Image (cartoon, rainbow, N blue to C red; front, side, top):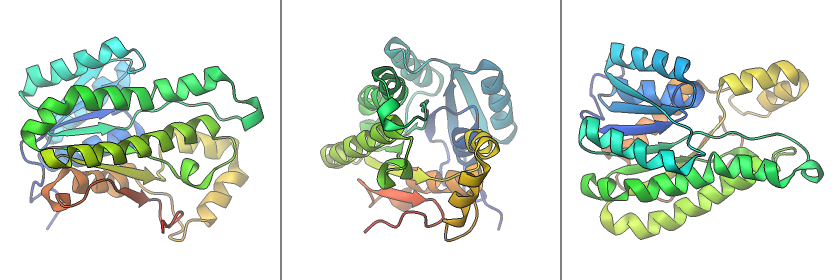
Length: 255
C-alpha cells in the first residue's frame, strides 16, 4: 500500500510556518498527501505560491505571505486560516532565521533575530490558536535542534532559541493536556536548502556531521521529517505529549 492511502489527516487543517521550502515544505507535502488542508506561511512569495500550487496538485493548500517576526501579522495568519477553512487542528512552528557566529562574537542583534523569528512567533501563535486547538483537540508541533541539545559551536543564538522553545513546549503540554491538546517537538537533521548551502561552504564540517550520524545519511525533508510530523498530527500519537522526537538518524540519543 502506498503512503497516503489511509489519509491519517483527512479534513484536518494545519498551519505550517516557513512552509515554502526546506523542512516546512516537506511537512506540508507529507500532510497534504494524508488529506490535510495545509496553510503555508512564508515571507518568500515566489516560493510560497509555487508550493501552494504543488499542494493543490496533491490535495489542498493555501499560501499566506507574512513576516512572522512582525507580531501584528500573526493574528492575520490565524484569522485567514479560520476564514478559509473554519477551524485549526494542527499548528507547526517551523520557521527560523539565525546567524552562525562564535559566542564571543554573538551580539544582542543576533539573539533578537533568532528569537524574533522563532521563539516569539511560536509563543504568540500558540496563544492565538489555543481556542481553535481546544475545540478540535488538536496538536502543536514545534521544532527543536540538536544544536541546542549538544551545544554546537557557532550556534549560541540558534541553540538558545531552540531550547527556549523546548522548555515552553513542556510547560504548555502540561497546561493543555486537560484540553486534549498534544504539544511535541521534532529535532531534525534534514537535507534542507540551508544545510545544502552550509555543506558547500563548510564541506569538512558537513562530512564530519554525516559521519557522526549512526544511519550515515542526512534525512529527507518530506519522507523522514514530514512523516514524523504526520504521526504527531494524527490520532496515532494521541497519548504522547511534551516529548522531543529526535529525527536525526541517531545523532543525539536522549536519556
